Length: 304
Image 1 (cartoon, rainbow, N blue to C red):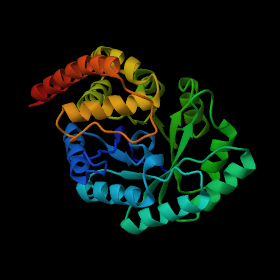
Image 2 (cartoon, rainbow, N blue to C red):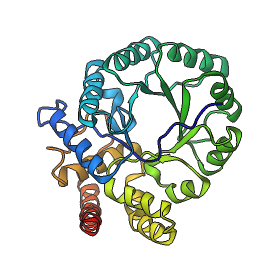
Image 3 (tube, rainbow, N blue to C red):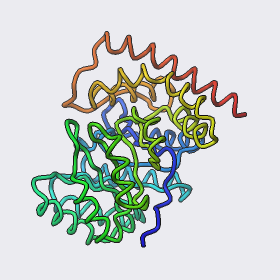
């Protein structure tokens, strides 16, 4: 029987910092990693949807993973994103990640039918990652069939983690945990707007972007049986999530602006094409960001 993959807590999905010239600022990326480690995160996912992954070249993706691996120094797991519609390109990326020493890889596979999906999955798995995390992403529905997830879990040794981003996610968390006897590590995405429900259902990890100290504190409080305090703190960030979760593009704008205002990223630049983030957006975002920074500083002070 498979052993549960040891990934518990907050796994940060890293935004991509750009310089004023539009190039990746690797120093800023490493600053964000160090800040997140200090906050207590359990791991990192890079590059992924929040990283504007489809606007990054293969070279940039590989360089980002290398920078994060170097900064973490094996303190926590790093999961390299191989999301790509082109199978050949995905296999090439995974091979490069493994060459760098990254043993954990995220698969995001376009679904046409079950046979196509299984064949695509098998070809990627054959490249040899030690741990596969499968992204079950569906912005408008239930996502991958339960029986397909179970079949892959039972037949592919490296498939040990599932990132659920479906609508709704709650019942699916419970069903997958039940079907796999709790041995498939289940993570919650969507900027973890369902975090409290996920905790109640036994979800192992959560994969947000930014607000590192706040998310880590919610998780810590819950695991310390301080559920009322955890729910109260989560309630404080709900207005921020309601704003940022309007659309993935708005979320990217928002959390890059947060990192910029925190002095972690040099700019809040994004790559086109992307939805606009206009004056009213920025005005609302800045009010939320001021509150986030205040909350994070309060948590840091109280833990000293």
